[in-house]
Length: 131
Image 1 (cartoon, rainbow, N blue to C red):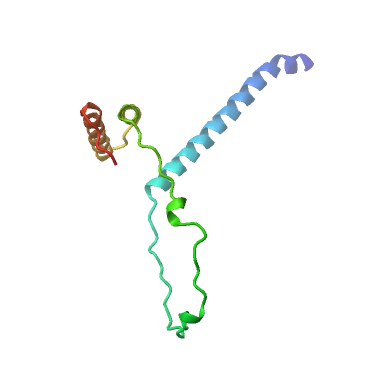
Image 2: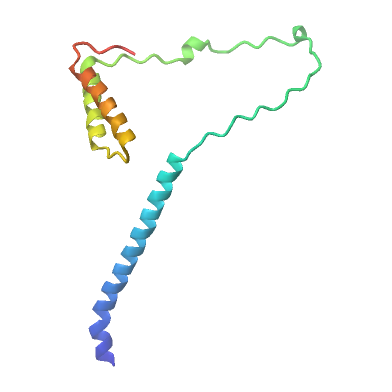
């Protein structure tokens, strides 16, 4: 009996590893299918606005005026414009990513083809329009 267990120990290990691998694959595929179905069927809920009741009027002249400590212009950051070469490289990268995409149906393929044609036009243009 002991020799049989020793002979089959290797086979049992292979069998268990294969079962764990198959289980992991099945759970991973189920997770991927759940993620894609949620993004496709995502519907925005209608915005609920609470009913406004008439509130008693308050004299605003008695309240102190609130002044911002820092002007709004200082809060906004202005970034340097991206050069045309960098924009072209970015468009080329986006085009490569669009080429890698695998459409699921004809409408999605048509949309991806239109986006690719627009990107090709931007890449071939003499000057790129600024945003």
